[in-house]
Amino acid sequence: MDITQLKSFVTVARLGHLTRAAEAVHLSQPAISGQIKALEREFGLALFDRTPTGMVLTPAGKRLLGHAESVMVDVQALRQTARELAAHLTGKLRLGTVLDPAFLRLGELIARTTERHPGIELDLHQVVSHDAIEQVRSGELDASFYFGALPDDLAGLPLRTMTYRVLVPAALASQTDEHWSSVAKQPWVVTPERSSHRQLVLQLFAERGSELSPAIEADNESVINNIVESGVGVSLVRDEIARLSVDAGRAMIWPGATIETRLWLVHDAARRADPLIVAILDILGELWHGPGQVSMEKAA
Image 1 (cartoon, rainbow, N blue to C red):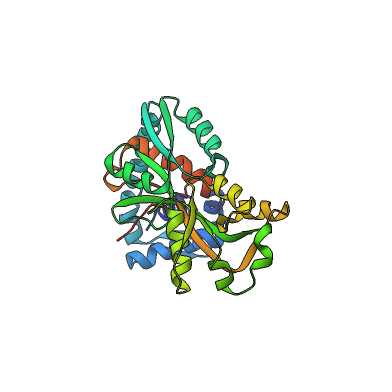
Image 2: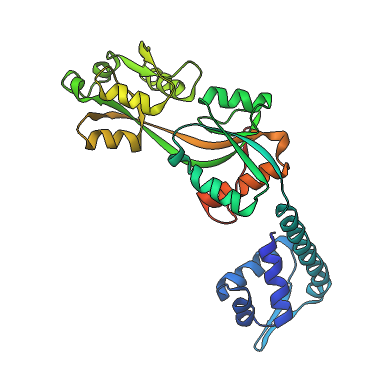
């Protein structure tokens, strides 16, 4: 049962007709009929008698209508209270960022936060993925963007899937073929230990039964890409960046491997109800998934 089904029930009961009720709630007649049927299945009761002239409440429907109307009033009061609280939210939110600002849509996040919650100050900190997790755990950060597997002890809002490619510099293209061994033996550019990028590279090697012998470390994806393009070695590079290098003729994508991971906004699971966290999650949910599409996850 959800609020939309209750709203449909109350509207049909008030108007006594599916078509007029559908128009009132801006749904199709089959959609509102389906919601009524779903509610009846959940309750195990017939709520309406279907007659040639319209929809008539059954005795059970009459008994439940008052309760449903009371719930709708409470929901409206809850929403109004939330709006009033949101209008007066104040405080500083320390937010960790990884990857580049455009990819994270930071400009849009800041603009919407400023517009909707002018009392919230966003304090942004560029961090590598491992530090992001540790600083959220320690409380140095209130929340952070992060990519990889969601840690067991944190809650996270999934934002999008990220795809990584093996990028080979043009200078080394003649030394690689379709066989993994030709790529694995090249120098590899990786991020520091325990970082998400490093874990993805290790996963790539482990799946192919080989060991990584890194040549150089870098903690920024633009630096990694620049090093690859310069001909020093190969690396895993985010798809969007890798394709720009290919289009510019500075590198090639090795076709034998693709790795996907997920981008999150993570925070301490105990702070799910924190008004500042809730406000930012609501805005990010709208930015990435559309209005009303926030979906929280916590690893078991």
